[in-house]
Length: 251
Image 1 (cartoon, one colour):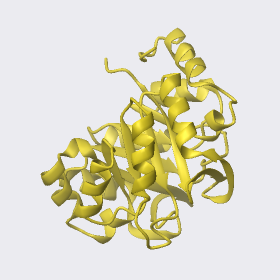
Image 2 (spheres, one colour):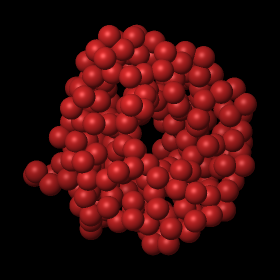
Image 3 (cartoon, helix red, strand yellow):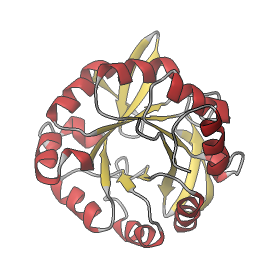
Image 4 (tube, helix red, strand yellow):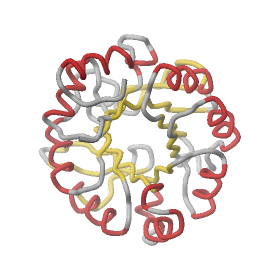
């Protein structure tokens, strides 16, 4: 069985790590480079760096910062936010990223997924999907959670996987920053739907939440931010607890 992955997330704005609740009310947590180095040293399996205002600000990802982060870490590194084109993806990979997460541009540019998968390989292309439950319907949002698209979560993810996406970063906007647990129903629906790996995001608050998302949600990886940034739980504590619960992790 493949080891489950514990993945800290750096939501970055103006070069600083920030965190909010339900994608709003951002507060500064610290320096992106310092956090990245810390998590790499603490045993994180991967790191995800999201320039969370790049798309809405209509600017490119801060590739200079990406280069500095990549110098400090020894684990796989995914970046997203403001990625709009093949050139952006190439710049991200040249800057030191192993994978690139695309969200808004994957929907707005109908050929971006297939073109990028053909050029760089599906293993490099992650689809970031931000979801809200509106009256029992799983609806997908782009543009930093501001704009609803006209596809439901199942329709959009199946389409993207068919085009060549190699991994799904699935975020519950409703659970984001709440520390109330992952949205297991949503994660299980998506993990049963497609064969590519699913990274669950939104709601991590306790070590038991990680057990739940792996055992009941069938996620391949679990992303968390504020509980690691604020040292509520350490990566080591999460992994030791998962191992005790007979969940395969890299220690």
